[in-house]
Structures are given as C-alpha cells and as structure tokens.
Length: 75
Image 1 (tube, one colour):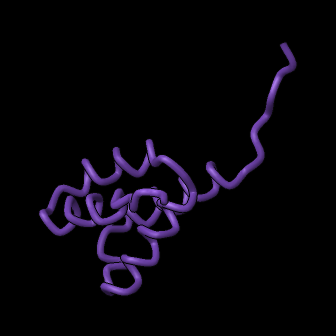
Image 2 (cartoon, rainbow, N blue to C red):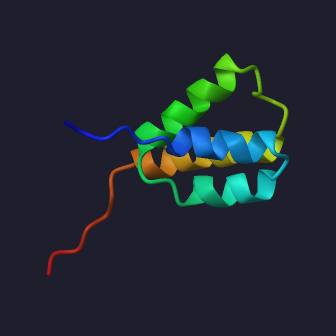
C-alpha cells in the first residue's frame, strides 16, 4: 500500500502562514504533476485562488513543466 503524500497540505500551510516565497520555492521543486494538481484543487476548495498571483503563476508553470514530455538524449 502506498503512503499518502501530504506535500500539498504542507505547501498550503506555508501559504496560510504568510510565507508565499517559501511556497513558490516548494512549488518549483514539486515532486510530481499529481502533487501540483492536488495543491491546485486545495487552493480552489479553500477559495485561495487569486489571493497570491505569484503562487497561481508558479502552479501554472509547474503544471506545464511537469506535464510536458521530456527531451531525452540517447546515451
């Protein structure tokens, strides 16, 4: 059984604590697109979308970056 990842709740706690810069830094190094989407859903549920425009932009950028296919080089 897989362990529950509460990365999104930790980032949300940073935002609620008033530390948007730390939240943006965490968003930039997000573990997966699934975690970013969970954070986005939590922001919608708690009606925090639009409160921090820099966070909204970081979420959009991270979603796009993690969703895009990677460019690989053969060895």
